[in-house]
Amino acid sequence: MAPPPHPTSGNGFANAFVARVLDDALASGARVYGICGLQGSGKSTLADQVAALARARGIRTTTVSLDDFYLERAARAALARDVHPLLATRGPPGTHDLALACATLDALRAGAAVAVPRFDKIADTRLPRGDWPCVEGTALTIFEGWCLCTPAEDAAALAEPVNALERDEDRDGAWRSHCNRALARDYPRLWRRIDRLLFLRPPGFDIVPAWRWQQEQTLQRAAPPRRRTMSRAEVERFVQHYERVSRQALRTLPAIAQWTVALSADRVPDLAP
Image 1 (cartoon, rainbow, N blue to C red):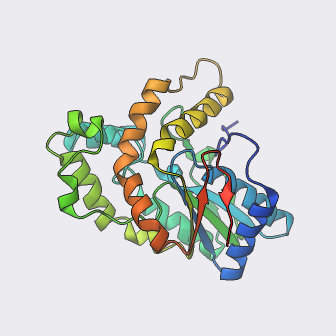
Image 2: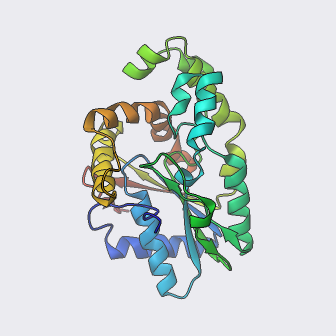
Image 3: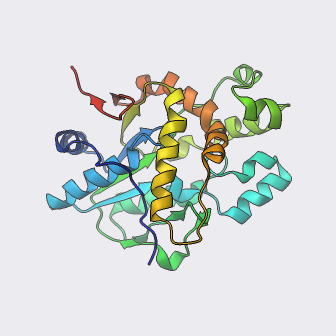
């Protein structure tokens, strides 16, 4: 049996907030509703909760994650060999199969029969196609991801490294420039498929390593015996691959998303008017 598509931690979000998100999606008429949040923010948990509530109301709903469209490990290994070694790590712009993502969202929007990709984060590659769930007649798609609708930075902003990873392993800026060009050139066609965007805004990037470690611990508990997950030190390094674009999301998405909800360090939404 395939692993759960979106491992979660904690008890999820309060029912009232979940209902409010679903009502927002329905009131907007969105066929593809985006939920953006940095690593460990609870976006996958929220997407699953909203979808469950929608189905309880009789609405045919499918969830899909940007993570499900990571390039497979062999494809990233080729990028690492031909472009830059840091492209072996999944997640940053330039490491997604955007053609597959666009085709999947288009099929879901049309209510067509489609197999929805799933990515196994422990094996670090996409599940075999035979393990993808097949859906048809989708009325609402919840599409979640860590950098949805985030714009590229100005090239001048790339000159200074934002962390030790960039300083030590991307000294000439080739990796971050490649990712930034991909974000500018390739990703807008995917973002245009999102009808409405909710941004779960964390207190700041500094909370992300702790949140991502909590997520990894959840993966560890769900993992079969002898399936290796990341250590705390590996998680700390891993999140540095995402830091630059995450900080760009924090700067820009409140003005781009149709709805921004601030989260506390405990992931409690601030719904004050």
